[in-house]
Image 1: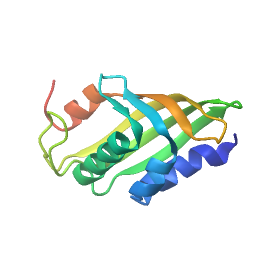
Image 2: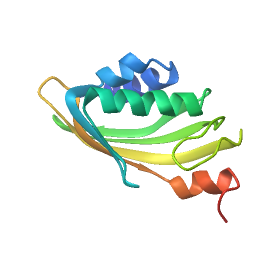
Image 3: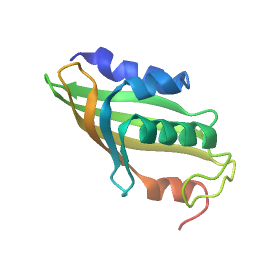
Image 4: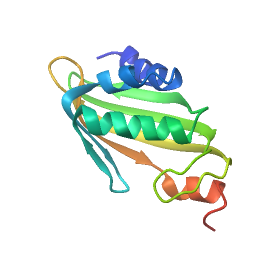
Length: 133
C-alpha cells in the first residue's frame, strides 16, 4: 500500500462520491465507529456515507499522516464541515465542525478495507455544535 491509499480515501469523501467511498471497502467490509455503531457490508456502508454527506453537505477530510504495511493501515485526519441536518442523536444546527480522527484497519488481498475502526472525537463535535459543555 502507498500514500495513494489514504489520499484516495480523502478524495472520494471530498468529491462526495458515494460509490467511490463504498468501493474503498471489500464487499463484506466492516466499518466500526469507536463510539459504538458498526456497519457491515456495502449496503450498511453506503447508508452511513449517504447519511454523513446528507448531514454535512460541505464535508471535507484532510489527511494529516498515514502509515501502511501490506495489509494494515492508519490514517490520521481532520474532518471539517457544517452539520446542516440530523445525524444520530445530533440535530442539524448549521454549526461548523473541525475535529480530528484516526482510522485503523486492515485490507484484503485486493487492497480493499476488510475492517476498520474510526476513532472520531464525537464529544468535540457535540461541543462545537453547542450540544455539550
